[in-house]
Amino acid sequence: MFTKAVALFVLGSLSIMGGNAWAENAPAPKLKFGMVDFQKAINESTDGKKAEQSMNAAVAEKKKKFDILKNELDVAKQDFEKQRLVLSGQPLQDKQLALQKKLMQVEQTGATYEQELSNKKAESLKKILTGLQTVVQGIGQKEGYTLIFEKSQGGVLFSAGAEDITDRVIKEYNAAPAK
Image (tube, rainbow, N blue to C red):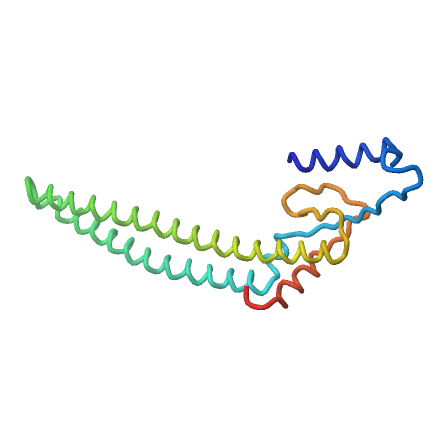
C-alpha cells in the first residue's frame, strides 16, 4: 500500500512539474505498464495443475481414512445405545468413557488432516508463486516495464493501456527448468 502511494506521488509530481525539475529539454521517460493475473497463472500452469491433482488425491485419501474412523465411531455409538439399557454402574461408565475417547480421537484426527492439507496447499502455492514472481521480474526487466500490477487480488479495477502478460508468464514459467 505504501509503495503504491509513493509511486502515485512520484508520477503525479512528474506530471505537475512537467518534467522541468529534471531538465528543460529532457524527454519525459516512457512509462510501460503491465498486468498479470496470478490466480489464472496458478490454475493454468503445469505445476498448478499438478498441485491441484495432488491436493485432490490427498483430500480423497484423508477423507477415506476419516470415513473409516467415523464409521467406527458410529458402530461404537450404536453398541453403546444397545448396551446402555442392560448395563449399569461402572461397566456403563467404562463404555461411555470409551465412546468419548473415540469421539475425541475422530475430532483430533479430522483437525490434524485439515491442518496437513492446509500446509500442503500453502507450500505448493508458495513454490509456484515464487517461480511466477521470478518470471514476471524477468519479463519486466527484459522488456522495460515500469510497473507490473497483480490483477486477480483486486488491486486493478480499471486499466487502459496496461498490457496483460499473464499468458506469457504462464508460457515462460512452464518452459523454465525444474522449479
